[in-house]
Image (cartoon, rainbow, N blue to C red; front, side, top):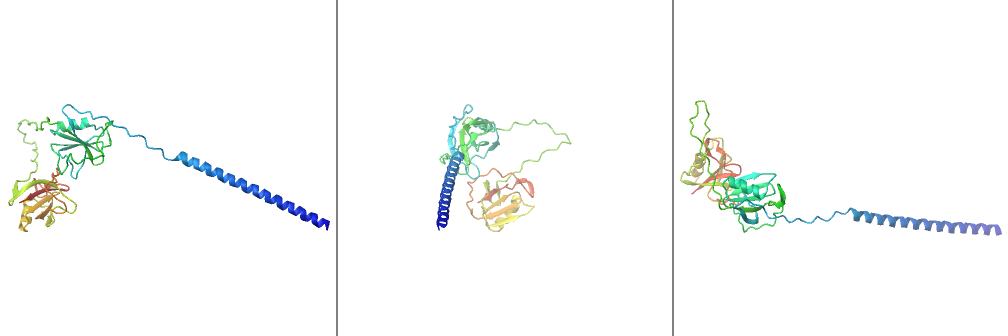
Amino acid sequence: MASQAASAFSASVSAAQSASAFSASASAAQQSISAYSASLSAYSASSAAPSPSPSVTPSAPTLPSGWTVAAGCIQEVAGRALTGARLDDPNLTPAVCANFCASRGFKFAGVEWYTECYCGDSLVNGASTDLVSGQCNRACGGDATQTCGGANAIQLYYNPNVVAASPSPSPSVAPSPSASVAPPAPTAPASINGLANKGCIQEVSGRALTGDSLANDNMTLQVCGDYCTGKGFSMFGVEYGRECYCGNSFSNGGSADLISGQCNMPCAGNSAQLCGGPNAINLYSA
């Protein structure tokens, strides 16, 4: 009986020791988990994205003599605010753009999207110095201390003393019999079938003239004019060399005020005439 009691006592002591060992093991595991969580938090804090570097205020533009700032930053418009000439230069600065535009005889120069330069004698296509933009934040391709516009945003400069460029006269030398003479540049007559030439305008999404259309490889201004006036329309336009469109009014936001400089394609049926261009219409209307 005493032996059985001693055995029971030993078993109880062993069970207590096992329980104590388990508690110590669980406590150590909990401390390991806590240490891992603390380590993970420290890693996350150390690997967080750094705060952005402070913005640098660009210096005032350095401009050639006679040029001044016409507008600090204005919005670009559909069809471009300046359509006289364009320069793409990875080393662009406001001075480079101003000199380029002056060499082409334009009074306005505009820099946009850090490497783009545009010229003209006036703002067109609804552009205005009243359309202020806050997006002129791109460093110039040629000088990171100056800004050159931004996404659809132009810095505009002006020189009223620029003289319009005129082509230098070529010497009157009779060509040799074998010399080839370049054909004259295509033109558009002042009127066709009683409708007046309104110049070159932008095409719009959905078409500016939606009354009727015709396309063929014999297209001329007269062919288009005959087709549209024969159908009773008071407006017609030719586009992309071979396309003809008719209407009595503009549709889809089309307008004679949306001037384009891209009417440079000869008519498919008469290379001496202009028949619009890519997304550009030679327009005739009453």
